[in-house]
Length: 431
Image (tube, rainbow, N blue to C red; front, top):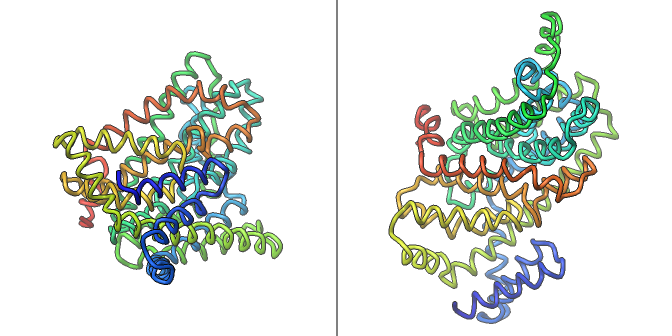
């Protein structure tokens, strides 16, 4: 290990240990290396150029607009309409409230583009109902935690936009379509575990819904679901770009919330402030990660990692197993956006060298990091879910273990059966 890497890792780890935000840890550790090996003026100029180049992208405009759209939907009372809609499909399944929770997270996560927003919005409504039916609180929290990241795979997804940027322009439309089947499989995996426990505990099934109630439920949910059709259909059909689609999503969600009379000026002001704050965090992460990417390139880290992995084995299966293992470990202590920004330039060249499509690898990477959202010590979905249900982490984690086993099995299927991810993009001629 050369001295640049030693300094980078040591400073980065020390800052994380003392509680510094990960963005600050990335920036300070990267600049430490640059100041040590470049003149101060050159280091600052290079860092500034990296930041400007990273943020000078039309595609990045989609991030604040999708965040705005998700915040409006989260405030506009759409979660309850989607939960009622899922009852039409899950009522006769074992543990119906678990199944409603999972499908609602899949739908609302896709619409909001946020695992945490889906987890909170759906959890707040479903948790009291589960307690009333005497569902196991720890298992209920585990189901909510494990299913909330599905919306990061089911488009539209800011994660895919970030990956597209850092991977050198991988098609966003192809990534969007590629995420559907893996996202659905992720939800189905959690659903199967929930069914097993439901049958074991003999939870009651849901009462039937009358035809008249079904019509009302579909009528109320249809406008929200139509947004996915409009945005994804427009992007895939080439009618507009993903960035333009994000603007349409924001406008559509705003008009819909105004029609529902779920927004006033005070709430809209809070939504805009929240959007600006979240956008600032994401863009700051992107900008400082560009400095680290320069340092990694300067230090030949991608080449060294590639040589190290290929030195262990030239078998693509072994190499991808090692990459998956590393990404699963990364996900336990690093949030999704910085992980994608830092590790895509390292692992994508290796994946391409052994014959993996960039779209396929983007799905593999995102699936790995989705699992990481649910794992300690830094899994944000785990902490939010436990706080929401007022359950200790150790109680919930024991219920999550069988779900992790199923999700990792699905991850391996996605990794080694490319058709799962690439079928839809190929069908629509995007790759």
